Amino acid sequence: MEQEGPVTLVVRHRARADRRAEFEEWLRGITREALQCAGMLGCNVVRPSDPSKGDYLVFLRFDTFKNLEAWEESETRRRWLARLDPLTQQAPTREKHSGMEVWFTPPSGLPQPARHKMVVVTLLALYPLIVVVQLTLAPVVADWPFLVRTFVSAALLVCLMTYLAMPLATRLFSRWLYTPAG
Image (cartoon, rainbow, N blue to C red; front, side, top):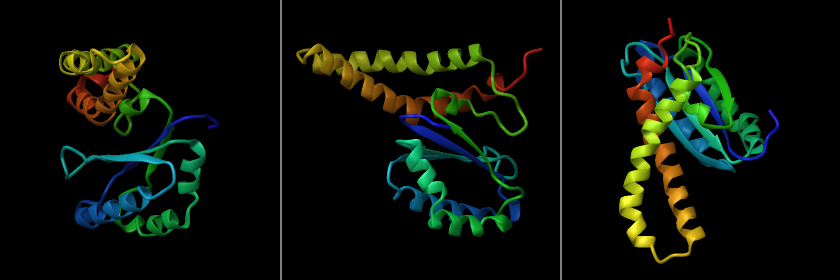
């Protein structure tokens, strides 16, 4: 995967039920270490809704593919991974993404949702944010130059979409998103 710009690594772990507390401790530790890496833009963990089953999804965002590779090849990461095997039911799965499709990573064994479903969920997440930003931010920045106003609005919307709206929307609509048509 050669590319410019941000890249997200999605790692899926299935923790052993009897080692869940140890897995959570391991996850906090490796996440803390990853956040210290050059180019790290952030990390999100989506825990299973039912702790007795289901996968943990870990989203690691880097500014470049090169910085992601540096993390993946680091000695620090190797040390943490050496401790993982007894805490999980199977080897982790990993996917690299460079766009919004990262929020639509299907649960294990299910296909990617249909594109029209991704569009609908993205629209349902984005539209209310645009309305709220326009109602609250527009009066404050009304006297700012057009390009600055637009940049500030876009930056705020991207942050809200990435850290709040899309994780919530994909969780709320997961049953519909990942149900095969038929």
